[in-house]
Length: 77
Length: 77
Image 1: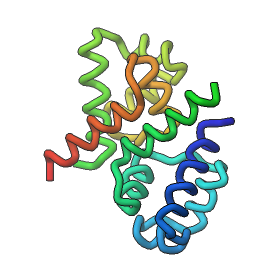
Image 2: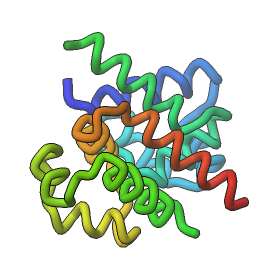
Image 3: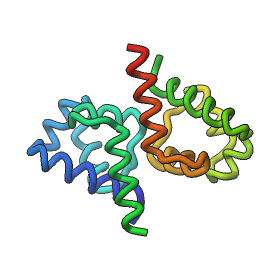
Image 4: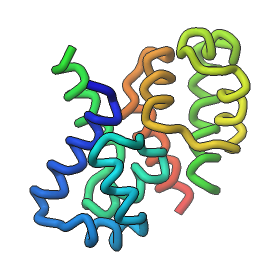
């Protein structure tokens, strides 16, 4: 699995746990809903600024988000 | 200071601490030397894949790299 796909799964899982719609996450993070959809499908990989914005909107740190991605990448090895 | 500039400073500081040239970091991370130079000058912001590749080359986790960036952003607030 590519690292952008891992990120997409992590993002979708956290968003759903917080019962947040893509629209709401887009609004809170000031990112486009279409962009968030592409991130969740692993079509795009996030930039540092997207990571910071998404993490803030999800009430966590960007480093925590990246840590979850790294754990999932390690698991899949 | 923009978050890409913060990243650039963090990257350069860690690289120099490890006495690694931009050329060596480029080789180890499989990224272009010019791209690394642009990252360090804050011209570009890193993508998730660059973060993962740079962190690996610097013998650390990408989440640790992002944590240093977040700490520096918080300090500057």
